Image (tube, rainbow, N blue to C red):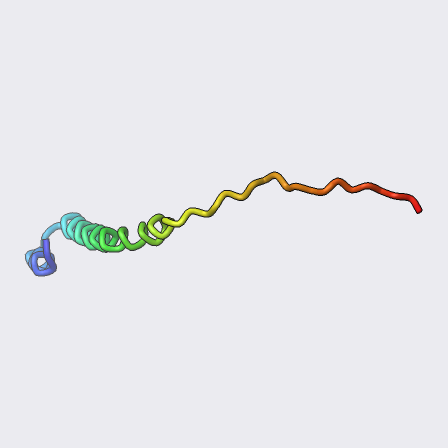
Length: 71
């Protein structure tokens, strides 16, 4: 449904529930189109830029033995 059909429904004195449903349907369709357009960019931003993996950091730390000397 497009806006001209909606205006025609209003002019023809269609029931308010039908007009409301038509407005909701148009709004949901436009919102879905916008979400479909934005989704690939958002997904690429979140998941696509992680091609380079961080090298693993070894959790073990080598320490030289310390000895306490009394002077």
